[in-house]
Length: 344
Ligand code: PHE
Image (cartoon, rainbow, N blue to C red; front, side, top):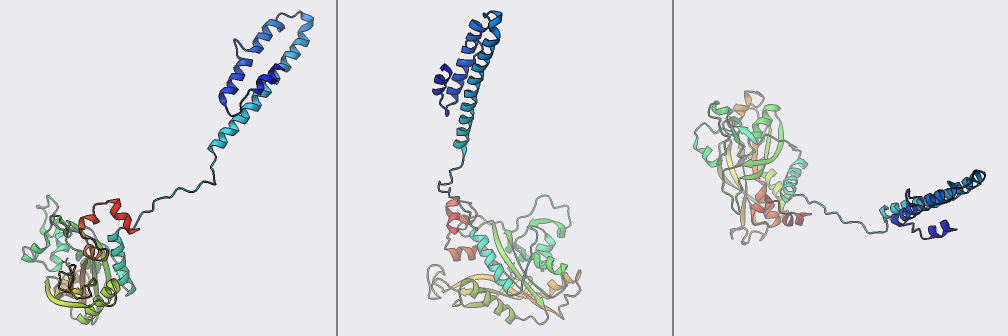
């Protein structure tokens, strides 16, 4: 009876109550069973030992049965505490957003993919040969000054053509692509480029370009104009117009700078286009026959008497800034979540 009444105090959810019960009955020095054993069992006359032993064992079994019940109940309730409450609302996870630069870059690339262009890449650490010489910038030619080149240190012992630098434009990948495959070629090349420019709201020493190259028989300047006009309409809307101005790049002849009518004011003049109605967006031109000459060392199929081509290069950062109304290029490289999460 005493076992049952003390077991009634067992609180199944409390491990302490179970332990107190165990100590009270089974404690090795002061437990009740020890006391019963000392006072009755050991002192009993031989004839009574058998009966007393049976009763003692029954008592012990009763205590242990109560303990078993209690401890399995308390471990079940510990499990309950850990169980998942499926009625709770879920925890909202913050979703990442595509970076506005990558978004713009992908958009430009896919416009050209829809016109049948494939996508290429090339190294950011480039040799003098691919960044300059094969693009018809001779050694010491002043046109190299326009590129604000960041060079890799300790290259002076190498021949000029092998010296390493950070590519200043994606145009070296034009050469690398043509060296790998005979004409025809239709390729766009997105990538990072580097220039020794001090950072300000419109300059960053690292920025992005998308290069384009199309080489085939009978490619003309009208193909170049039609292609870029279409691409700009896809990018900024069909009401956007393009116009071409004479320009100079060593690797294209003739060369042109392309302006688009301001997509913000429709060409009427606003702050974004500095009230001119036009925004300059890219450089382009017909591939200079001298460039095909360099490529012919590896791919004789690029014979300027049989084929022709055009190339263009555009700054992705400027286009992204225009599209999303970003006034400081530094925001594109700062990694500030408050800025980035707006593009989700
Ligand atoms: N590579 C030139 C630049 O970075 C852009 C360009 C590319 C011009 C292809 C003509 C043809 O300034």
